[in-house]
Length: 276
Image (tube, rainbow, N blue to C red; front, side, top):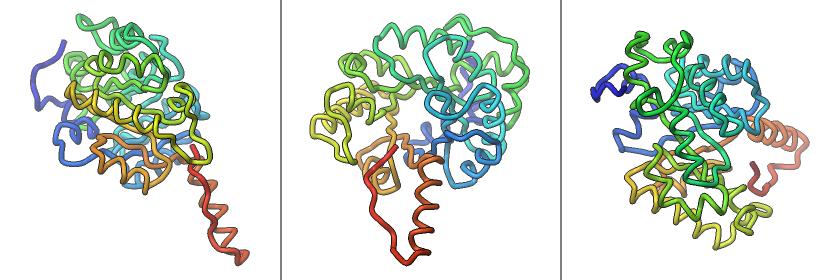
């Protein structure tokens, strides 16, 4: 169902995909965990290339997702939805909302990934149902119904998180199947027996992260990672990561408020360990 046209409307209207295609810099993004279109707009105006609408761990339900996605897209930023689970209907709801891509958490097997890709693609590449009149409005220029059907498969991003021992063991087989393999360091550390404690990452976790990056590069795919702040994000950018989460709304809001109040009390800013 792909159009075969590298300058199609859908490709041109996906800012994150364009950054990946240009390969001139990493795509920096932020994580939305709190519901509300105004929060979505604040995040999209921050200078981010993409905003992750977190329906897994965030306080984002289906209705809030449908508010966040258009608010982000209207500001020329790619809305990506992290779905709560691998169920096909969740993939369909996210893409039908107009998301420019999906991120699937806690995958374990190659079969998990194959089933996810099938759910994300229109026939003949997959089994996604067609019919949402909502998705098209979140691309600029706006594709027609027919253009969306013909171009979505090549233009929307399918991403999976490598954060289990099973997925790590199969990462070289998984990487060629998707657009992006995205590292969740906290769950990955937990699942390989080297959790991040007070911000400290064991060498074994660092080695696992390097293996995942290498698998993506070898497969000609992009590699993303979740970071806890700008300094860590810069370090991973320098290592060659293509998609980097810099901050979450919930954590950054709490930290900024606490810092301001601490300074107001004359106590100065306090160093804190890296936190989700």
